[in-house]
Figure 1 (cartoon, one colour):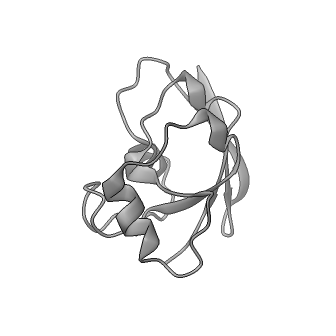
Figure 2: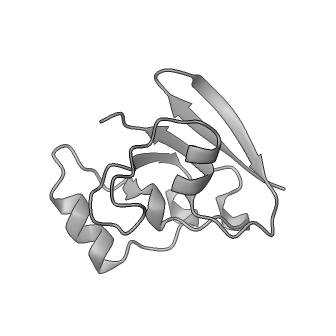
Length: 104
């Protein structure tokens, strides 16, 4: 199992476990786990409504793509730990990572 943590103002700190063979991105897993993630563009990296902050384990993620960086650069308060959940593929590297959700 792949286990990571999510910090959310509404639900607090929760551990999420998903099977290793899952073929989803973080946004899809969060939506399936009933977190409020607008994801207006449906995961195309066009709206940034799935922004998360990686508070622990950012080094485990691949670097953001140019498209993701362009979207993040448009957001006020964006930091080096900001990512789009739709662009983070679920894999074993995410184990132990902590994501803080931003509510739009």
